[in-house]
Length: 346
Image (cartoon, rainbow, N blue to C red; front, side, top):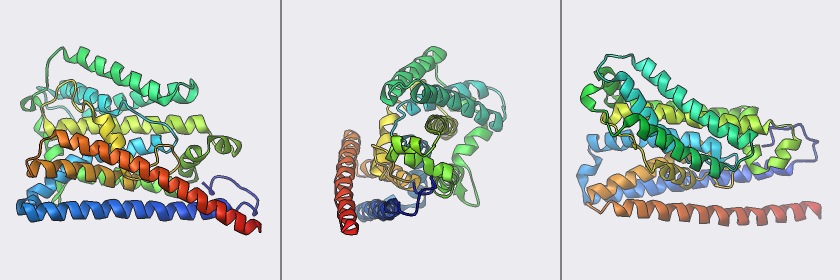
């Protein structure tokens, strides 16, 4: 935030605020990591097979697609917006690319490019409606969720993609690896690291946080708000498109409503990971940890033979808890900053 503008030396309070924010974010991320470690340890005591090599690999494979979506959603949420269409984009891309490769030894690269193009187009539509037309993000992305879902049903016509029709080269992307590391987690980590580095190291990346913290102040500072919000939606769409291709590679068999309901799971992962729903605060690393935590909870419930209903219930509970914690932290920080301001003023 302070890297965005050239302000007079007198304006040094935001720097202190930024340091306090960084401290809080690190504490949130460490607490999520701690909860994850405790969850895994307790489950391993109850069922030692949970920490088998295959069990650990399955957790990371299952989390990879959610991490990709959470990274894209983080960009959108820190600008005080939301993208509820990502689950529908994943389903549409998975089915369309599945149709493209079915029965032929098509290029994996071309399948990925098609997925990225479809995702980018969906993100572009969302971004234009939100940033340039001024339509609320919740309304836009809820509408495009159903539109994209409808397009998927129309294309599918009740059909499905079978793993037997998908080229082995694409299926290998979902199950293979390099030097013992599966491709999916590797792709997710590389994307997360690239986006995280950009947001922290580049002035244009910090502008996303400035928009979320105070749109009016960002506008006065000369931040191209519309362009940044549009960029956030396009990146979210791109990553949803990539996630759709990887969904096909991972599962092989795909129906029109693949990833149905995942939009709320993605939002939950982001918010649980410390990204404030009101914008301006959070990191892609925290969002990735949130995605890993939710995925691990799902795996734990399966291992413990708990009804899958409780996974949705726990996800909702974690979402409510995270939003409550965000609110309490915001109030606490405001009090601290007011005290500091009063102290310096005296």
